[in-house]
Image 1 (tube, rainbow, N blue to C red):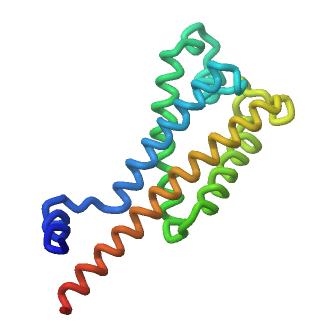
Image 2 (image 1 turned 180 degrees about the horizontal axis):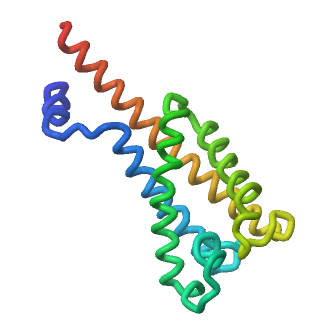
Amino acid sequence: MADKQKDQRQQEPQQSVLAKAMITGFTGGVLWSGLGAIAYYFNFTEVSSASFIFRSFWQTDWTGTWLAEILAVLIVGILSLGTALLYYLVLKKRNGIWPGVFFGLGLWAFVFLLLTPIFPAIPTFLELNSDTWVTTVCLFILYGVFIGYSISYEYREFNETLNSYSNEGRI
């Protein structure tokens, strides 16, 4: 059994933890902003990715279309690379759900308290309704937990694999 696992590890190309963190960041950005777009469509929230990215700068017809929403979701995925890098640099060694929860809450506060004055198409924090607060807080927490668990898990797995290789060499 141990030989089979060792052979499998040797066959799989080793990808760096940082590269996996970047993939996780893009995937998380697309997944959770996509769910945010669905929440916007069903009126659970007053803001969408396209609101932040496009409607604040261009007031044209196409910014209200699904094409704008899909493009905005992809842009959020790209911006999420930076978020994943931040988590990787600061919190990768933290295990459990709480680092991701607090990371998501911190991102939410950054976006909705600090960035909304920059984006004129987004109502201020106090102008948003409670449905928007609850929905977006939940989405950001889920995003943070997704990023946090994934990056911490890959970091831990990578280090355990390194330790098992070094222990095998000593035996």
